[in-house]
Length: 117
View 1 (cartoon, helix red, strand yellow):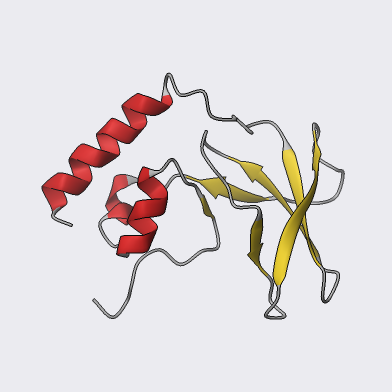
View 2: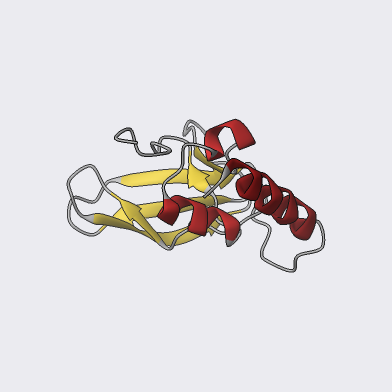
């Protein structure tokens, strides 16, 4: 996708989110748990947007969303789902752009873009 098209779609996304009726999880904390190894991860939203029902686990399996807190559990630092700034968007793969432009957020530890480009 050309830079100009990315910029246009990104601005349309930001403008549309102002009036979008999608769930706004900011201020909540979600727990994802791996069915295989039992590891849990706490997440939160930095921005209004869509997050996945499952995320990859370090063990190679998937962590599924299992519950949501209205307040941050003490002693646990959450990972944040965020909308990458425009400068990061230029390096995204086509599938990442598709996710982003469908109001999707990214986990802060996700690698953005394809280093082979």
